[in-house]
Amino acid sequence: MMETNSKVLKVTSFISEMKDVARSFKENDLNVGFVPTMGCLHEGHLNLIKKSLESCDRTVVSIFVNQTQFGPNEDLHSYPRQLQSDIEKLEEVGVDVLFHPTNEEMYPSGHKTSLQVNKITKSLCGKSRPSLFIGVSTVVLKLFNIVQPNKAFFGEKDWQQLAVIEALVEDLNLDIALIRVPIVREADGLAMSSRNCYLSPQDRITALSLSRSLKQAVDVIRQGTTSSKVISHLIQQCLLEKGGLEIDYISICDPKSFKEKEQICGRTLIALAVKIGKSRLIDNCVIEEF
Ligand code: AMP
Image (cartoon, rainbow, N blue to C red; front, side):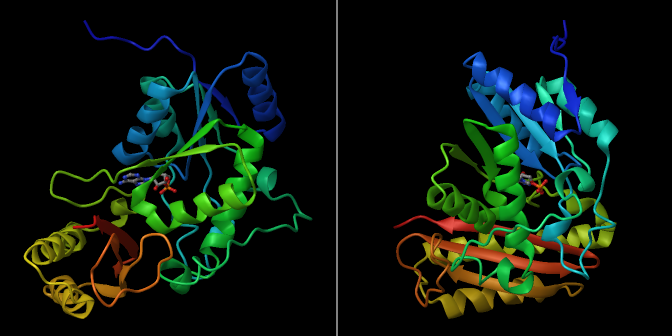
């Protein structure tokens, strides 16, 4: 017999209501897990939610397409939105609360504060998207203040974003445990992303070159190549092989400081960002010390 979930999903768009719920969780000594998202939920999001459901008494998910992290020529207006089917997915897995505020609720006129994490936000995605991490840091801190979670779950797909949030939690002395969750991929290797739905069938095939180039890089490194220049060139060739793709960056760097490495030694992050059609896609892998 199929097991049906008996929990009722509470849905709210209001900060005051979300804060009331958060307060009642605290008063009842419940451990709260939080998964912030921009919606259009896929298995990558659902895996974060699963980890929260497994380890927390209550799970809060937010869906908010955060305008402040998009630059003027980015995809804010076309970003995929599908609230109804997201709600069905959240109900099915047994999430307790969905917080989906409006822009006006999060950024009423007169909102003047933003938060900047320094140093690690200057390279990789921060270089090509200068407003990204200020927007992300500000909204995540606001969401943490509203939801008051004990644990918050983030995907390693957005490796640099995770490092930025780790820095803000540490620097601002927040009592929140951040849980890192590995990248969830499609069967053919493509990292899941809400933006994958923009891809035409041809672009979808082109997009496979991201995970394929990372895999090739790992294989060559395992065979003994340590020069970042050589690895970077190999990745570039693999990405550009079939055309239809523009490279934003290929970074071979320290996974914490994001300083570029000339040689692969010690733990190393290989991170990529490309544009395919309208979509900007990212992927990464970490070479553990060997
Ligand atoms: P987004 O809705 O794209 O802002 O992502 C919300 C959260 O889901 C972030 O912590 C992402 O890193 C995470 N996430 C998105 N895609 C994946 C994926 N394929 N695997 C793991 N985590 C993911």
